[in-house]
Length: 562
Image (cartoon, rainbow, N blue to C red; front, side, top):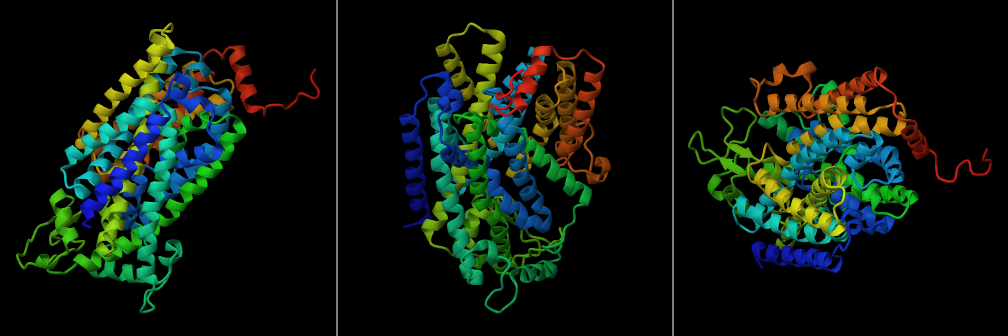
């Protein structure tokens, strides 16, 4: 069977499964819609969290960034993994104990103010839209190549599927579809990685394979460094980013993770605080499987790509090359008209442009794996993009229906009315996300990295100070969030979108890239929050007591009550 037929079959089976689960677990109450009724087991929640966490950026883009950036690409691995640990250990159990459905809900109640809640809703929507645009773009890329439709049509098909199970099932439907999506995406990521690892190094474990040697006894990384040197690229295993920038990007990704609204919500779906910790542990294990394999996939795909295309005749290129060309994600411009592909670092002579986002998806084709494996990767990429998109849509719809309408505009709204509002806002959110998916800013992982910067700049200080500093008041939190998010937005739009007389790399402040600037904005947020709270009224006594109560493990101090 051809790749296209295999893709239709596998994507059809997986989509039927997701939609079936959504119908089976339809949400009947707002508690079902927001937190799946609060009765999910730690193992299922761990699987769902891992799927929610590993988006199109993790599945499609991360190995692509590492394969082009080499050593520099490792910041994404370190930042996203470290951030997940930070979230699971430092924040999730306390937020779970506070018992709020959403981050704006926590911030609104902890800072006893609707202004704080409004700012938090604005930040949640901004972060979620930036992030969901990256997912929709990933969906478009997969559809355009494997189902051979244009990217716009691909995004629209993805929108319809996500809408169906996110709007119908809410968190309950999303949780169980995410369990299925994790199984699909991890299988789809690992099968080709294992095949190619055996092909290139005779080692079935990709994590060990990419540090191993090929048939001639040459180490794979040495071979890749040699290929890079020949073509004038920087050595794969050496970095070009400054240590300061690496540190700031890693920190922004870490603390951005810990402030990501769609991951935090997952910890409310279990019965008790202990289960929140257990599910965090499970999720880390499931995430580690993909994250430790990504550098191997990056090395395999980069080596295969260079050996297949460099200095080879254009007319003799394999079918996959021509197919990707039709999507516009590989472009060949024969500058010297000799019919050979010059793929080199020198931009004047280079004739080939390769989009980073195709590396994982094209990898099995370049390695000549069976058609069903190639189709499996397409189904996996869709599972990764759709699982995260659904989680984000839920954050957007609950921010609007629960935090804006129920808590601020119309407190007397019925449960049925709130559920309808949540579903309508999800529909609007999908349409906006689809627009950004069709007209994306940058490639998937860069778009997603900016979402992390925004979350770091706005939420993280407000959440951490809200939990660990009982004298933190509403004035400080609101001032900090506003200054942090505006500073990050200014820097991002100046250096990414060339607004305000856009600057070049040389103009970066302290040499810090827009992806790493979230850390600077977060530090400013902390300073502003604490300074303002020192010069304004202390929070009410009952709020201080709540904060103290969150940090004491339940059951402590009962034996010797005063």
